[in-house]
Image (cartoon, rainbow, N blue to C red; front, side, top):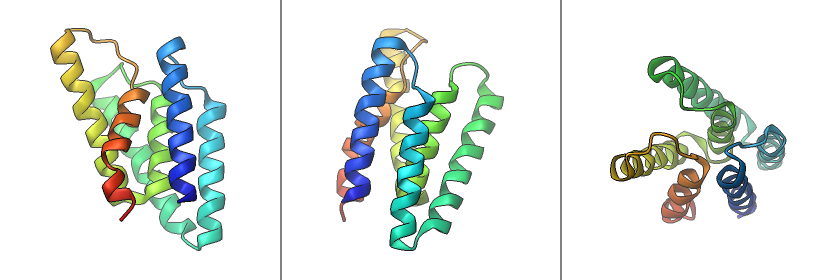
Length: 133
């Protein structure tokens, strides 16, 4: 429950800042990553959390190399935070859901520039049944 509340808080603040300023501050992402690691240290699941975060980080960096510009550093670290917080099975659903929602918005609005954090938050909220089971 603690990791859920931390994630909800980080994603809500990241979304608000991203909408207002088109940036996700590193201090916010790194605070979330640090606190998620502490929670997993307490639960004894830190190795899995760090490996999941590393996989998500590598995936997003490779994605940037494939598609080029469009995903910023704040987006990478926000997705890494999700990977550390929830591990690979759930974080995959959250991140893929966010990409799907963002693609739908781009297709509908024909606007290529989007703020990604609100889509991560929306996907996170849609994945609550998976997270809370």
